[in-house]
Image (spheres, rainbow, N blue to C red):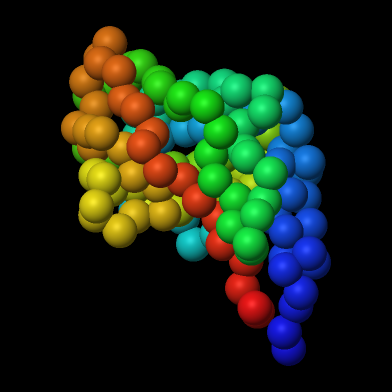
Length: 132
């Protein structure tokens, strides 16, 4: 099955609409849980509220982060995965791998070694729609 670019863009824009204007980005140690419905795993190393307009409008079947995403580490450890939850931290809606820039993760950061009080900046986070 193949979708038009317009449909793919609308699907991607629904991601931001579903999570709302103040979702939480969390960095965890270790491997990600099996899926978003599974309980958190690892140690929570850092958490931030994403900007109110945290993703750019989808274009050509792709949607990228908007603005600067910088979080301060609260516990020392190696970042293994991220989770994005609604503003009330009730449900996880997205999760994936985290690597250094160029490492091929679902999200890339400037430093995967979190330290207390250290800034961690997300360099890339892009969602691509399938079925082109």
